[in-house]
Length: 278
Image (tube, rainbow, N blue to C red):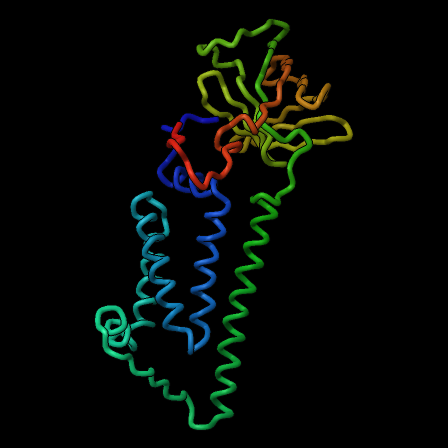
């Protein structure tokens, strides 16, 4: 609900990838696959090749969309090349010659079988530990900021159909800075109000469903706080009443049907007679 030109390059990249959950899963699975393969000695070369290909793509995106993990992704490329260095001749021969490739020699780390077995178990255990820690962190983010996060009972994008300030109806004029255009309830701890000129005012918020109360606060002013009562008269109708900066506010809101957006309702097409580009 914000002009595309206001987005930073990083936000454009983040939201473009986020628009396709299937691609998100594919890209993430590739990174996981490469990381898991490098744990085991027999599959280290394959894992390093997967990591190298994937990290080159990630590094390119970071450089071209100004994502602030450029050095980190470049270091992962160097790590992949380091793992491939020992077998570089065999890899070059595999891709650029028709000669038979000799089996790789993998000298044991220790002299005894027992010591090598312990080293292998420790290596795999450490790799699995890292995988579990990353999985735990990913699940935590999913349930706090991702699609599995708690959503407010009045979740959604709401158009302000009518707004009165101190009893005076405010027409939806683009020049009216005090007239809201939309109210966006996305998180349980924040609410966004959009003005007629498309600029956003973000507030910390909390919703009490029992008392039907919306409490707003400003991060830059700890003493600023206000309350609105809300009444959901229908599934797609919401009424807000309260005060803000010494003025009485009354708003009648209409829920925007997200399925009307092409980004949401456009299904998959195996064959397209014509490009669908809007």
